[in-house]
Image (tube, rainbow, N blue to C red):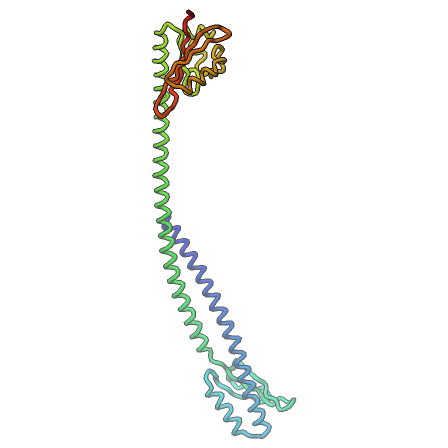
Length: 292
């Protein structure tokens, strides 16, 4: 299919070039015809001047020599004269020129011009043009064929890259699913571990949102279940919204416990931000202390 398309384009291009070559030859033929007419007119005017002079002087020898010289001229065929009566001589001529003695017409000069040189020139121009078109067509054909092969190769590469991209997307989705399942499982383990701790305890993640808490902490924060407040920011949780300065101090000093007492409820709390590698926050534990 692709090879056929290349061949079709090459054939259309060859037809276009052949049409241009034909037009060029036609224009050359027309130009040669006009040049031939101009040359015949100049030749006839020159010969008529001599013939008119010989007619006025009754010099038949000069008339005969002039016609003989015309006959020997390159490209001139069958030069002859007709008398003023215009009777046909049985010879066909391409060009005729009126011979006059003053205002009186006394004869016609008839002759033909050979188009052998013009035909040879047009044939040569046609052959050179055809050879040039053939070479150009062959070059363009191979060029189009090469471009078609290159385009086909690029299409194959694009398809391969698309396949690789789809594979990577699928792998990424599977990795995200595994990571999500791992996070859910870790949160479940964390909640199970927190459930074994009798003291109120909760964990804020790296974005300072509630990641998990046990039931005693949920009771202190007026939540029915530990899951009710999961994912909420500390600012949206009553009992933690007033602890902004203490939380900021804990984030600035990871690995050190920071304590404060809530002025409204009078509860003592301890904030402890875990330290990870490269200075990143690993979350903040919030422990509710017993009153002493």
